[in-house]
Image 1 (tube, rainbow, N blue to C red):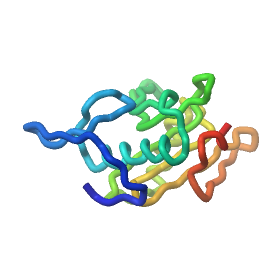
Image 2: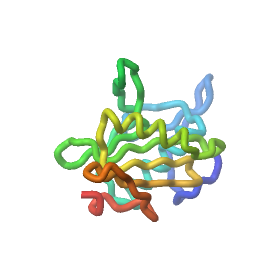
Image 3: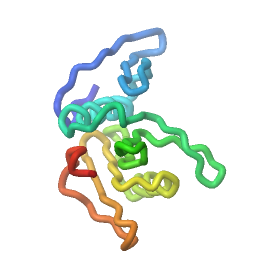
Image 4: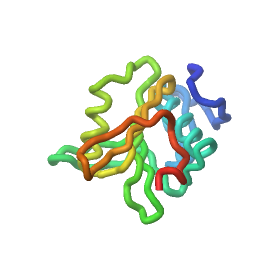
Length: 150
């Protein structure tokens, strides 16, 4: 798989008749190793190992309904009370992060009301903090540690 702009991590990977599978430690199951999944697994490890995000408060592929349409959030991180704190949206490394990507995560956030939004294609990472009182947002220079989010 492609080298990403993240530290190197070791993963459990196996193959079957359909291709390669990677063990998703959050979902506790084997999933197809697509380029986007490669970004997800690396970024989740980055959040846990390097940014001290508690794995117990993280979930991948969270279902939500917006205006009667079922959608799926890539990764959701909760605060200690179980409330949405961070939404992460992943794209394959070949997919450029555009306004359309941010529009997608903002739609999810209309339902979830998280305080932080992160978008990554494994090469570029963007994090913004939502200010609900002033109806605005600000981009952060780096992905904060979990303790800085609270």
